[in-house]
Length: 485
Image (cartoon, rainbow, N blue to C red; front, side):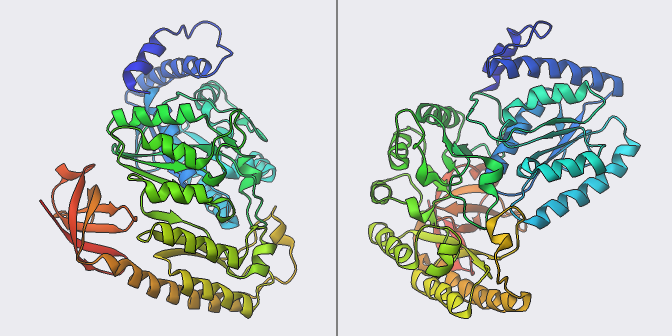
């Protein structure tokens, strides 16, 4: 939705009347109400109110934060990069236990600031808030927090802000689950030329180490018409690349009234004129179909990059992880993908030290790394996550054993990654220019279709455009290049 349309909608709303029951009209009503409250507060202070949104975790959270920023800017707040702001929001992650401890530590620092600025507001949202014990701890030990909400009702942010601004008590609104998807609310994109687009929410996989299904809820897919319409609006606003987001995009469409596969959705999105690049994540190997591989093979817009989490190369450990594929199936899938799309860049996630992992299991993982030859891998040391089946499994691996395996894996992954990254040296490739290089202002930084970074001489007028660059030298995991033409 563009600003002009939003202002027209808000202009037609009577914020003094009764709030509509229907969404998104109800949120527009509270958006207008919040504007009046923010304006009143701002005039009393003699300056604009400021906000800071800090995002922890995945790209789903990053996209949610864009929605928070969109609402805050539309009701009159001005963004600030540090936490010395009038309204500080932590959009939390809870994939790992230590993420929770980081948030508690940051809250302690904010408490001191709030004592000096009583008008300051603090909000917490995201996955961590979906855990009942977290909310109880916040109520007991962090009563200075103004607003707590979760992952399922982020669309209610305007309504929740009004509650927080008009209440002298902590406002808590947590839903256990939802089947609701509310469209057409504002979001403020970080980049003008690329954007994330949610195609689905939640997860049905219940991997034994993962908390996500418990905090994000069951899978629910957005309507393909709504997805296409959103991307068309983004393209009209200058976006040339979209990242389709879901915990498992390969299972998209199964709960729709008229089921549609992810591959079919991609074909519809490909038809959008002006859209140049399509990315997506994350792909669960168990659901990656031959149909999707064929669509990727024939596509002119789908980027030559696939993130395909392995987690372990041991079929025995994969079963304990509840991943529902084995080593042989994973390798066969990679072979099919590479046969169809020879120039594809494959990246992955690997967990080291899962409960019960033997040296033989670890060597199976190393074997997959050698055979697949990933461009890069996110490698993680297994850590217990309270609330998951793996946390109570017997045979937790000693820390020193895990560290030894992790170090050996990292050395090999990085060596292979450097070799794979260098394979396009000397070729001319299309690069989406993303920003001015932060270390050298004479250089621009862009990204290849296969997701590798390229630095080349240029100026900021190129940002957001697709240019042809000769890849002169590979320096590990990025290229130095020269613009051609």
